[in-house]
Image (cartoon, rainbow, N blue to C red; front, top):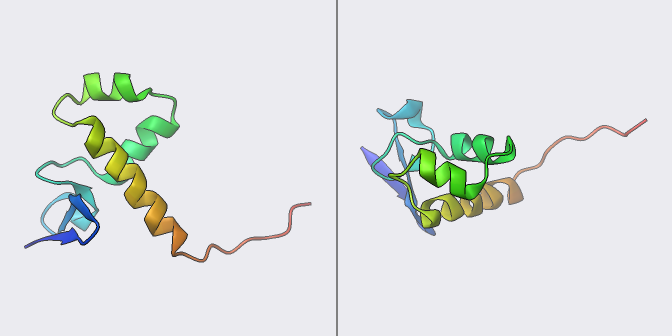
Length: 81
């Protein structure tokens, strides 16, 4: 069964696809993979050329989704030395 997020229609979760990781709808492209490519230095244009079945809107929604998820998390910190 596929689930969508209320504010993120392009992001779906299906336990049968990518072990239930949030993915771009109707693909096997996890949000985490998109962020990894972009944070690793790949430009948006290069990413879209490499994965031409995705759109700029897909990538932007993946980024917005990730930002929304981290906003509601408590991440333990330790004092810097």
